[in-house]
Length: 277
Ligand SMILES: Cc1cc2nc3c(=O)[nH]c(=O)nc-3n(C[C@H](O)[C@H](O)[C@H](O)COP(=O)(O)OP(=O)(O)OC[C@H]3O[C@@H](n4cnc5c(N)ncnc54)[C@H](O)[C@@H]3O)c2cc1C
Image (cartoon, rainbow, N blue to C red):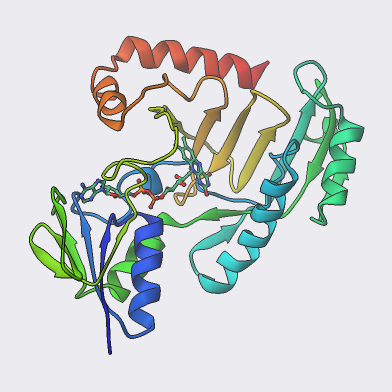
């Protein structure tokens, strides 16, 4: 007997779940309010496929990142590219850990890296720098792959407004399914544990650099990372990228709509000062 699955949300999670169920032979329908796959968080982030080098203070997250990294590459070999120069630097002043401690933590996580001279990369205010292999996610290729795999299963431009359980069926906007998976990252169903919502600001830059990433660790620091376009980079900052904390997604989204050029410029200057300093 084949079951039918309704998946709400065509971000990375929804697309992965829907294509996995489809590959197992189930009947799958995936709904998204937007007309393009991976339009929200999945298409607007720092595109890191990382091994946990920026989680010096959490062993569990490092192990999850390290193992998830391998699994993602195995499962989706075409959806990421290697980065030629991928640096993690521990600044003298602002880091919560010193370089020797950082190096020890990373060695114990079983992830490979080599130590490099800070001066080689013009990072003279850093007490230590490591070079390691990580990758950048190819959002363009992910959209292509999932569009192809889910060709007849997509209901794009459809906002789910109702979910009703009647007998053994669950109805999405009136259509019956055996199972429903909410992959909206908390935008549709209420999350049962305490959460807050943070609208975020990521800055994009055009540069002559190629395949270069720099992450300052550890603490409320900043990072530069490549994107799927070779001359475009993102700048993100733990302290300046979040624009506020809100109780609901609706409040967070309406705050975003009111963001002005002046507010962006102010944040931009904070982020640029942080990375230059
Ligand atoms: C600033 C920032 C940087 C980040 N950097 C990284 C990084 O470098 N590497 C990394 O791995 N992760 C990163 N993340 C986290 C990553 O972006 C998310 O974990 C991931 O994108 C979540 O995917 P998702 O599919 O759950 O959500 P989303 O991509 O948000 O997908 C949810 C989908 O649900 C749809 N939807 C919502 N409500 C409805 C409705 N009622 N009806 C129909 N459709 C609906 C939306 O349109 C959306 O397409 C970052 C996040 C942020 C905010």
